[in-house]
Length: 111
Length: 112
Image 1 (tube, rainbow over the protein chains, first blue to last red):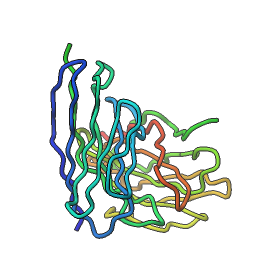
Image 2 (image 1 turned 90 degrees about the horizontal axis):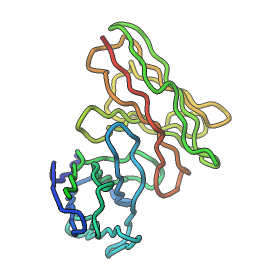
Image 3 (image 1 turned 180 degrees about the vertical axis):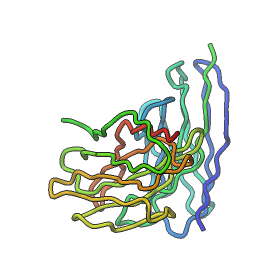
Image 4 (image 1 turned 60 degrees about the vertical axis):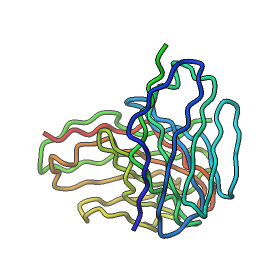
């Protein structure tokens, strides 16, 4: 089966750091992806891990541990515009786009 | 460089009707997938098209069908609409063995 779990909601303060966790159990693994989705809009690509370790892209970092089936997205220096849903997704197969998405974590950034 | 474009943006249909949604992939991409996203949930994979053929399919009934054209654009067709088909339908494009998928803005379908 395919299962991805992430917290439903999180709240943080402007300027702070927040970590959004994701655990997964899938039939195959060819990468873990993080997307940001503002209400009513399309998901936009943030970060991608295929090997264990940390990937850093400006204020956003993503970590992967394949042996633990675990990833997190780290957002630094939070801004109000970071209020959105964050989707964790696994691509089980190399030759495809059949991403398995988690339910999304709705992040609220407060002033 | 245009990204992934979808049409229409919003649509209202009556139960039992049929609907066709359209998608043009990002320039240079050859693979298109369709996802259904209910309110407050993550996207669910419907199917993927590559080289004008359906290559992978998620857990959706045969009422959901699609097509890919030689220019890589794609259509999603849904027959015999049910109230539960109301959702945001997302199209994503990538290279077949590429990294991330890039999403269009979606079509909001409401079935009444």
